Amino acid sequence: MNYSLINVSHERNGLVDGVWLQDCTGVALEEAKKRSRDTERANSNRIVVAVVESLNYSSSNYTLRRGMKRLG
Image 1 (spheres, helix red, strand yellow):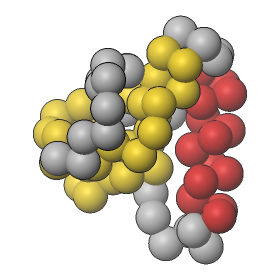
Image 2 (cartoon, rainbow, N blue to C red):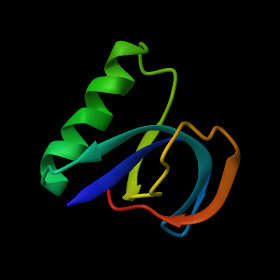
Image 3 (spheres, rainbow, N blue to C red):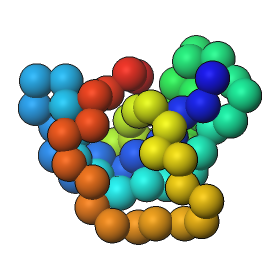
């Protein structure tokens, strides 16, 4: 599967708003969740990272996205 990691700016009812951090291509959801926790830990837990369905960017796009369903 393909997932994206999002730096969460706001969360409500399982939906997140945030900015794309990186893609996780060809990994299981559990591996994407592990990568999100590792990213939070690497940033001293000062950021919240969510796993969402792939945003299918062909290049980096750091615009704020709204209403994405949090998978992990």
